[in-house]
Length: 283
Picture 1 (cartoon, rainbow, N blue to C red):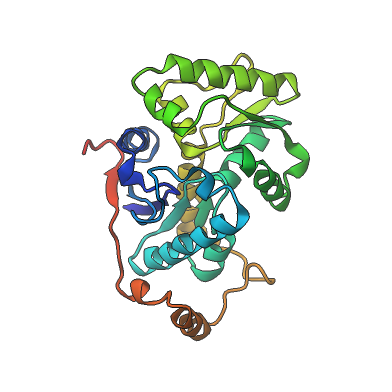
Picture 2 (tube, rainbow, N blue to C red; picture 1 turned 180 degrees about the vertical axis):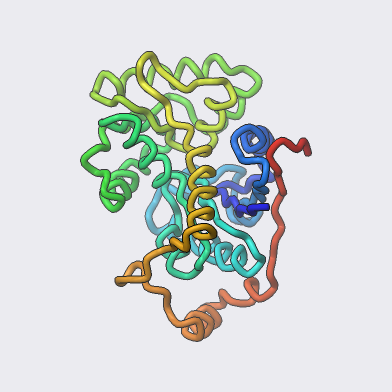
């Protein structure tokens, strides 16, 4: 059984409609031998149910990064095979990869690379407009800046998407209008801009706008988890350890500095508080 730690940027237990849609999607796209355990941010992270502007400023998002890094360490110590950072800005991706030897996959990086194999000009339909700068910066770092085209802001927000699970047509219409604008600006493949919108679209079978594919970014991330874990197990292929961003620091230095910054005790506790989902198994 391949075990994946999924890490959301939401406090996922506070948004049951999204959580249930994620569970349904996992049961559809993951391999039968895969168990995915859903984890959200600590319940007290945000003053409201959804982060909104609490993640759309660089400094505030960087404060949240520690939960992703800590949870990567917990995932490895708890015997997980892989970690999936299930949010398009790939919060904590570089740091987590530098600290653990299990594969760490980012929603954004996985979906951008899959999109680059499906088309020549990537468009993003986004509902958190301030993240556009970060997404362009990330695409450059991934070597795909030249393929990233328009980033179009939708007229809908997170709670509109949640409402869409009961009344889907307004969300579908808004997404299609935004995607058509991106296509008119040159995009020939579309990436949904955040997990909730992606999972909503997948749940309602939205995979193309005319001739243009819509990437299932969540599935792309899960499949990348499966593939990189298989490569590690079957071929011995693992993360580079060369250079400032990728070299793994000495374990003793990591422990001492995390303890100094009051970030170590929870890792030793081996916390694993997530919701387990297995492909094809109803829960």
